[in-house]
Length: 331
Image (cartoon, rainbow, N blue to C red):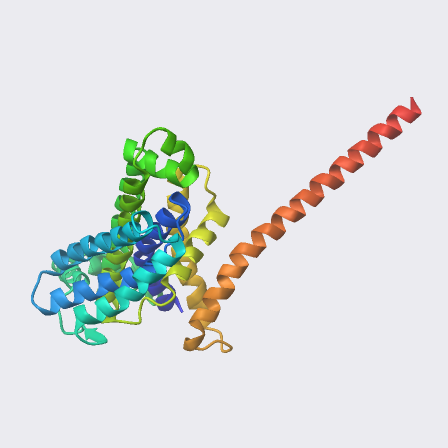
């Protein structure tokens, strides 16, 4: 059980990068970008093919990020210059990327089990310094033998990476360009009245969003040991689930808090899925059903809680009103 939950935390931190990209397009730009399902696979495909052809995995992962940025820019161009509906422009780019991803990989699946990846190189480095051995010895000395994972390299490295990316995103959204992108999502007419180039802002915003998504896809391909043309199906729902769950639990009063909520939401989502799959009722093929149920719950439950709070406030007001009226009558 602990091993499954620990693996969920690892994958959750990787998917959190994708969730930040979804947050950037859906919440900051207010743009329903369905390119995510395609750009996620694009990042995986590009990194996998480059690694198989002998390119350093770190370089391959950075190239995947750049290619994802270009894919997002194409969606922005379709919408701004082609005057295509935002939803439709994302769908068109997602469909186009399916064929592009097949062209990149040359086949539907590219295995990486025998190749050097970012995570295998990190593991080698950790073994050289004896970090895992020291941590395992510490847990064993505490009597927690059954709660010692094989390696901490993935979870600690991804935690550091996601925190750095969160800091950079927070900083960017407070810059002049970042504030302008936020303004486009909040009130496009207002930012247009200031003679800002809203088309360029949307293109840059969508490019950054899909760059993060492709970056996550590259890591997931190396983490799972393969890149598959169908691995991006439902990614937009997973990203939205992470955003919604995080916002419901942490809140969105500030940008710093909102991005932290997205990261926490991504990890919690993976933990919920892992625990649900442990139940005998669910099977592996029920992943999409579980995701849909999680999203519906994350959307409906906060509304029900708010309604209950409103009812309690109204009842308290009525009681106070009755009490005041009674007091005046007695006087």
